[in-house]
Image (cartoon, rainbow, N blue to C red; front, side, top):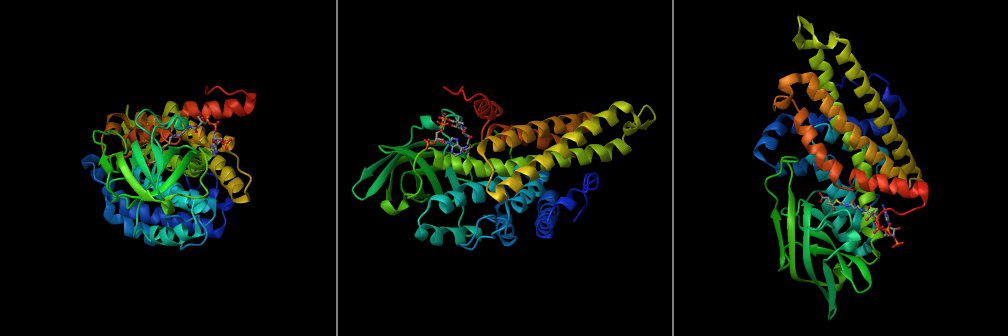
Length: 388
Ligand code: TGC
């Protein structure tokens, strides 16, 4: 696979196990050869290239960190590296892998019955069935405790009503994990999207994540049988437990976007001439590149530390917030700085920088905004809850 200019700086691979490097190189090769050549055009034309899904499944990336049920059983670090390599090409494709593996499959894996797991997970790992994750609602995503969607018992089944927004993949998905308020608290349901009353509509007009799909969902008297309920999902902690998984993937993924911007900036600094010499020979440019590299290397090491903790089973949610807040925020700064090194060319689709910048604004917003993560960290430090 192509080598990143930043690969060699700290010999990061020396910290990885052979199977982790294998996953990373497989993902880099796939992303660079299958997605990279088409992504600018897909972003420009707002096209989600669903025809790549069988190949992505064949690579083993869907639910790769889950054990059994036809899933890969890989380490959290391997999964993180796949997120990094995929997002180095486009956040939309890392989001696809996250929505499938970290959200929809992970909800079934964590909270489903054996029957539900045996039925859905192998098909989803093969990409034969797609899932989405319906938590966020139109009034805002930061306060899911205030969810308006309801599920009411009706005979031996449930009837769901409400709406969801920003739901990745919903128009393509075969099932949606719908989170709803019941008289016993928040519960989760596996809702086949062909169920009468389930309506998904793709959101148009996005200036970010244009090569991927996010949707509105309307649920109007959607009737599901009792066995659609996820039996082990009890309370708001259940969907938030899935968000932890997606946030974890973002900690790595954001550094992929950052690396892509940094690589382009380094390359361009050697060839773009201003005042008669390459812009990279000016001290101000070198200072920018140095600062970007420092933040990239710190971000990757933080991701690895968090990944090792996840694999050891010692990771807590405050640490996830530290990683998500830092790595997305720094990736955005790196992308913006890279744009200045590219000059006017930086705003064109000839370079990936502006696309990454725009995508990262979505990444900053979903799975907990900067402010949510600051307050999670603040609460852990002070013992005082600033949310309400
Ligand atoms: P709080 O009282 O703190 O907690 C309520 C219950 O939840 C538990 N909990 C968690 N459990 C696991 N992981 C976490 N990260 C958890 N955070 C909280 C907590 O232990 C408690 O459990 P229990 O059993 O005691 O009841 O709740 P709060 O209402 O004060 O809110 C806390 C806050 C603000 C941190 C939380 O609501 C939050 O994280 N908000 C941000 C939500 C968010 O990230 N939304 C964006 C989601 S993106 C999306 O939905 C789109 S899907 C992607 C796609 O399809 O593209």
